[in-house]
Length: 527
Ligand code: MCA
Ligand code: AMP
Image 1: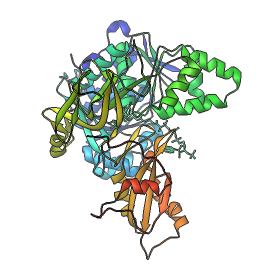
Image 2: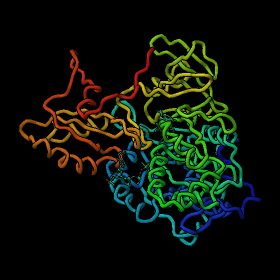
Image 3: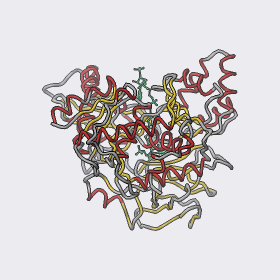
Image 4: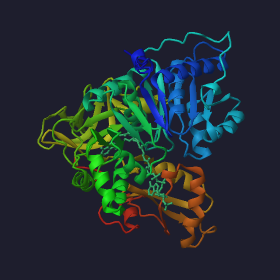
């Protein structure tokens, strides 16, 4: 089987609703037809019968057009490169260039932002959307049959932050995506009567595979809500029409705040409604035990926390049936081989659910059919990411009483804020290119709601020196124009010098202290 199972829903599903958006519903039949038509259009405009691994960047709001485009790219054997509507031009262009996109596709106002980059690069831009009549009919000469997909074909490139500078492209094949999907469908018992409320961005695995491809593979319905709004989300969760919800911890924290602010009658309705859902999943960052407990207190529902990564799909999950342990991410998902290794000695401390030492803690390494194949055009980084065929996640965990608990990341330069992975180095490199900045250090401040908040300590150039209280006013809008919203520092300090050790290396724990942060979250566990 390949992802073509996803792209070829059985004909008996034709009248079933695949997508709900803005009060309109779209069936599996429409999805099939529209994606076939769009695939033919893509092939016709490229003048070929097979995109043969060409990268297609696409930009549009989450919704039906997104799904049609994703399927069309796959059906024409292209590689899908989803772009983020919130990103400023610089970030979009970085991805377009790094992936070396040869076609850009956009829908609506959002998508039109690709016109200029396409023109500048001399590549075609296709505007799509506006209903079936918006798809020009294929000409007689257009390819009628679509190429066949195989499991080994590259399907998607997603950009993820690393410890070195700008994001890198994680390539997954159709077979890897399918292995990810089928593992989750089994573990979380997806079924065709499910309806998921989808509130996540569609340029990351969580929103794309877990919350979109899984339900469509199972014949279920995906209800898009537009961008996340806590009150509207509660109303939909309590509607009795939704059965599944997936979100990052920040979203659950925001939902709890909205509940606290609501009137008693509304609270009761929300609590009862959300408590009746079949499944609520949290992932992408650590779910604070406080949030887990409070959620159970007000809805009676124990959130299912799981652990994943762009490179591996989903690795660990609390059980669907069985104990969901707060603060823990459970056990390896079906098909996932997972072990803990002490990096200094390469000693394997645990594998699967078996610990070879009591309370073994070490780096999580993963192997299995869902693990990615390569960083796009970065063979050395790909090679360095694996040891004996095992992918080194860079996350530290401990196996306690048969359940894994994440301790943190080995690198202080990787932050997580609102579920987004952020490279401190990327922000530092950008800041250093500003004429008023001599040096800087970026850290993550522990934050109850966001996990971490990005903070920058800046040493100004003596000549350009703005007064300390003007640093933020000068740099914040400048960074905002150049980096994704979630990478923009939320706290700033102007300092004469950065704290360094005897070797001259910046001491990030001491940088944290500049922001009056007492305890640092555990990042480098023993071993
Ligand atoms: C925004 N604000 C922030 C941050 N972002 N403050 C601190 N830290 C931040 N990171 C501030 C804004 O300035 C604004 O303040 C206010 O919060 C609301 O901002 P807004 O952007 O409107 O927030 P939002 O739209 O409510 O977004 C929050 C969000 C979003 C919904 C949690 O961040 C989100 O969708 N996160 C999901 C990320 C995700 O899907 N990650 C998956 C990747 P003011 O009002 O004062 O201006 S990880 C993955 O895929 C792996 C495989 C996995 O395991 O899942
Ligand atoms: P990304 O690279 O954006 O795919 O994010 C993957 C990273 O998110 C992992 O390497 C972990 O550091 C973190 N992560 C994902 N799920 C969890 C979780 N349940 N608890 C703690 N960290 C998590």
